[in-house]
Length: 137
Image 1 (cartoon, rainbow, N blue to C red):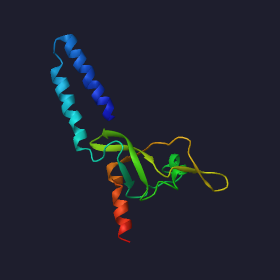
Image 2: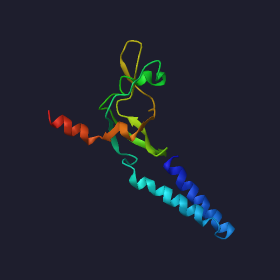
Image 3: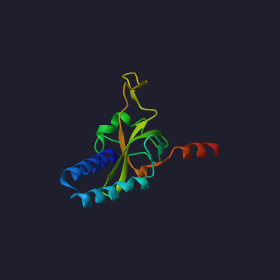
Image 4: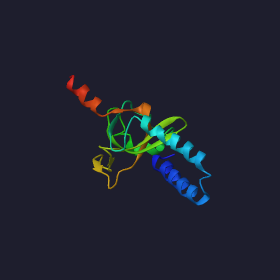
């Protein structure tokens, strides 16, 4: 479920409460409690993150990401565009800084509009870790 979806549902239940004379209060309270999960979310929308490991990208397991294999690598930086909570885990929709496509001559080209790539929190770290590790060199 997307973060924005839950707030819309809470708002709709609030409207229904007014119409029904307040008989949906327990549902609203339940959803407000569920909505508090975002206070525990490790990354905010607009925050910069980086991949902490390179995903396995090949024709058998992840053919849809083959065109992104050259930039979806450990250390790649991105901006959090979307947050979701599913099956007890946070999942993030990311726009990567270095997203490109490779033309027939093997040259990287900029994309017209960015694609959103979904990663769980175990794949990510704050982007400032990248700067700290570079300073140590």
